[in-house]
Length: 401
Image 1 (cartoon, rainbow, N blue to C red):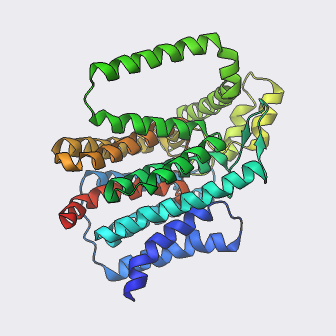
Image 2 (cartoon, one colour):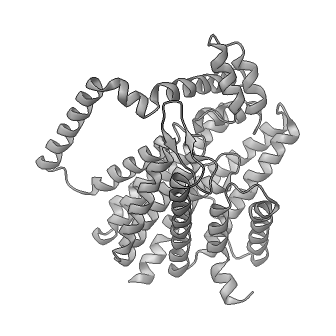
Image 3 (spheres, one colour):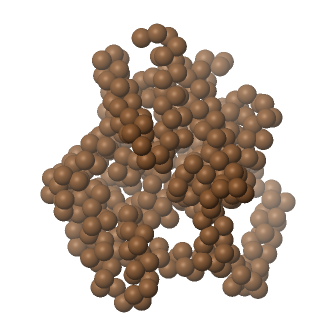
């Protein structure tokens, strides 16, 4: 393989997997299926990667095994096996990414691929907002997803792109990356994705924990919280309507309840990957809610539980959900531990990684994707790209020195 292809094939793949995220065409199938198989094939043929059986790898292996066993006893076996193989391909792809990202330049190229994708998505959102198609909510809120038909996924990509733009700013110190951050955050607001806006706020909060809590910061924080609480009580109806909280939380609560009830009825192996859309409506019909609300949910379809941990428990059982929680906690603890071990000059980098992790984690309480959701590469891959960068970071820091 030529040196140019070896250097660029992964960033090109990441760029294409983002910008074609919601294309319904054969090209998308080639990018999302054939391209990963090509990458995994290169990884397996080269056979350079020696698997380290550390705790995260062991937990991921147990998670994959649970997915397989659950699929064999699933509500719809063939459907679940399809999603099992997607998850298997997904994690092989992440292993191939770790093998490929063996120098600092590849890390920078990967981050820039995400940023460029964010620019294209942002421009498409601005165009949709003012000249193209938008989504108008019942409360009058206008939302735009640009090249993404799912505005929440678009919001998540922009949240990730914002963090990676700041990451490259920390690496290169070039002020133009602040313009990218402004572009991405503005486009994020246009998507109306509350979960992704919350994730960005959480990431910023945890990143800024690197500063000491001076009296000034404490006073400003307490004053902001106080004003926020007072504003909520004075303008509760307008805030609830503007943020679509009443209807949004009501619908999510129903989806939470469906997922929890399924997990309670199938606690060991769940109903199998990808079967929530078929089993969920059977639970919905028995719920004491209005017919209009049932029909509204059924029209959209019960595609998820809007909580990654509840959905995992429903589809592959409490055991599978436990493995997922342990994976997340183990990775999070590694991030936190490295902050304590890092030199002062590297702490900004590790605090940002930790902030991104916490943002994704909080978002997953309201969305089912972002960590691992049936091998959905377009959204789930960023959590793992960040983990690979973290694992390679000591090598990168040595090269920079």
